[in-house]
Image: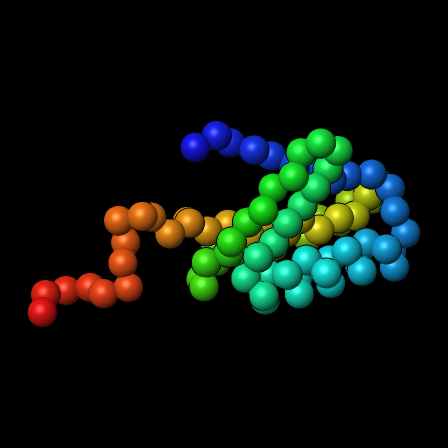
Length: 85
């Protein structure tokens, strides 16, 4: 499978940024998350359990927050039934 990366960046107002994050949170809850940037779009299917990393940084000249969510997609060999019958 190929690796695709869609990266969205730039300057936007705090209300627009918050609205974008709220939309992403709603999509995450619904089980499907999409990001399009230019000609590249990526659709993701989050797992039930996520690896979450949130980092806040404050310097004299700049503040920021980095949020990283990652997960392992389900493998075709994995089935809902486990163990022996």
